[in-house]
Image (tube, rainbow, N blue to C red; front, side):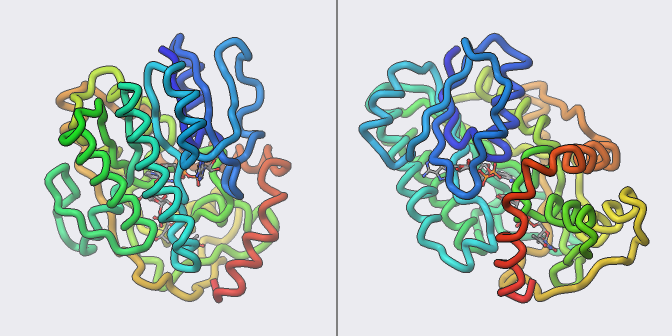
Length: 331
Ligand code: NAD
Ligand code: DAU
């Protein structure tokens, strides 16, 4: 297969591209605008014959008209992805997440291309800390932030294009990813790189908020399973039973880096901060036979810390500007 990967220079997209080229015979074209979040260096060393990079915008219909006929499938990762940025300036989230997804769907419709839409568990809103429930494919949509509401909107566009126009699409909603190539604005890389620079980790609010962590490679293998065996028009939830509160994660990072577990600061909370996410991925496991491979979070975190330690040249250029933005928000 020839796969067009939108947003392939971002965190999860680049991990997917490495995974596909390592684990399958497929070839890949990345279409990426290279916003502040895209990094060409995340795609170095890939086999030239099976990999191509195109810099461009998913809102550019003429460019999509050139690219779609050359590919068997499109996997759509491109997005504005950071909740904090969406609170500061929502507009790019509407442009890329809504209009961009719409433009891709129109191209998929015109060219009859198989389409897989990457989405998030945040479309379901949040759960109480003591609620035994988890999100399932049946949970009603209830997004909280400008980011998650634009992702919810993009999911609904995909569903409508399947039903109204017969577009051959699937959707997946995944929980919080961790691993290499994640921008330092995000929670785990921010805290690791703070400690590596001799700064203290910053915990929003009380630190009791829970996220359901999954290694980016497990997300990639799940997406490949859906592309291969998923039913058109269906949604699959991706998660690996990785619930941890933010305080526990910061303590693990500090301990693994040889610092006292309490050497962190509490900072201003995120407005509207979702309390807890938790995914029930039993449909994906039962129907498509998918299983996560990186179930030991502490081992995965240690490997991620090693990656940031070894790749300072990858993250250092972004670190000062990112911290200056947080400082201005009291975070
Ligand atoms: P990211 O911010 O690291 O990467 C996004 C990429 O999209 C960047 O390379 C950027 O340059 C590119 N991009 C942005 N706007 C574009 C446009 N208009 N045209 C072309 N390219 C554009 O994001 P991420 O964390 O890798 O997330 C990727 C996808 O996975 C998103 O759709 C996100 O909603 C979803 N997701 C993320 C997580 C997570 O934990 N990070 C979990 C579940 C789902
Ligand atoms: O659940 C999937 C989502 O996970 C994806 O859709 C998003 O694209 C992705 O960014 C992520 O969203 P979160 O808002 O959960 O991730 P973030 O890394 O921003 O924050 C994780 C948690 O850590 C959250 O509770 C806020 C908290 N946090 C974050 C930062 C940056 C802190 O306590 N301190 C921080 O410095």
